[in-house]
Structures are given as structure tokens and as C-alpha cells.
Length: 234
Image 1 (tube, rainbow, N blue to C red):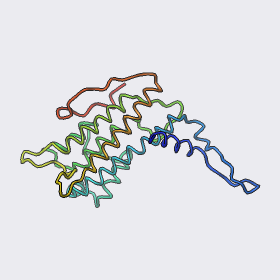
Image 2 (image 1 turned 180 degrees about the vertical axis):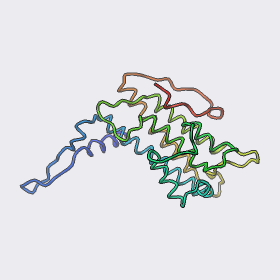
Image 3 (image 1 turned 30 degrees about the vertical axis):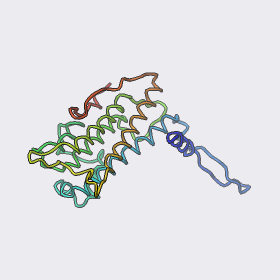
């Protein structure tokens, strides 16, 4: 039912209203939506929600790990999140030569001395950008690959596992996220990652249906998993 509501909202946004000569409102269609299918409009909203969710996770991680944005040279937590938001227009010399999973993995490597939140979320966002073919909007002639979306969803699962389990040699978590103390329990990180994962899985299913294809769900232990490739898939 939730996704039926999403589709309804997308359909309604294609229309606007104006005041007619008789004082009554008249519905008009936004011209750009004539070039979009329902799947394209779903993809627009899905991508925006996924990116928004990851930026929210970044902000929450910076709140729990304030030293990270300072290590990255940002003037504030908000500035660090905004850099991620503007990622496609900036310079990322610190990640030169690395891609997607290799960048995200830096957050859980002791030899890395930079901003771990930036590395993790930038790596995940670059996977999502690749899964959506580096486009903000989609039109009739655009196509998506269901396996890229599916792998991106699985990588969210890997990320939340690593946040809760990967530790330094001293036994400390690389990044603080969920709080499991019964007196102050907070699973908001896991919930938001779960929402992002669900959005990507839903989009993968929609794209597979449109492409007339099916895909096999991978069976793997998250504990031993690495980040799956996205941009290198055909």
C-alpha cells in the first residue's frame, strides 16, 4: 500500500492547476512529464529519497563522531554534509584512483587517517550514482540496470554490518552508530539504512519487470562480504 501511495503522488505531481477565466481551477500537465513514463517518475523520486537518506545518515554519523568532519578539514558538520551533497561538482583528491567499495572500505581501515564518515558515505553515494547512471532525472529513452540497483541495496547491508562490528586493533568501533545500551537504545541508523535498502530493492524489481527480466538473489554471509561492484556491471 505504501508504494501505491508513492505512485499516486508521482502521478499527481505531473499535473498543476491554474485559474480559468470563469474563476474555476483547471488542471494542466507539466510538459516535461509528457516525456516520462510512470517508471521514470518513480525512478526520479526513488533516487532522490535514497540520496536524501544517505545524507541523513552522514549527518547522524557526524553528530556521533564529530572528530571526523574536523579531520576532513570542514568548517562545520553542515559543511561536510553539503560537500557530499555537491559531490558531483567537487574535487576528491583524497580518493584519487579508488572507486565505490574501495572508498567506503577506507572507513574501516586503520591506516586511513582521513574523515571516515566522508569515505563511507561518499563511497555509498558513488554506488547509488552509478546505479542510477549518474542522472538526476529519467525520461522515456533512459534505461536502468536492475543488478546495479540490487548490488547497491546489498552494499547498504554490508555497511550497517561493518558499522556495528568492524573494530580497531584496540577493540574500538571505527565509527559510532547504533546505541545498543538498553538504557539509551537507538537503532535509527539501522532503520534508515533499511529504508534506503528497501527503496533500492523496490526500484530493482520495477526495472527488472520493465526489462522483462528476473535476477537471482545472492546468498552470502554479510559478516564475510565485501562491497559488491556497481559501475562495472553491464
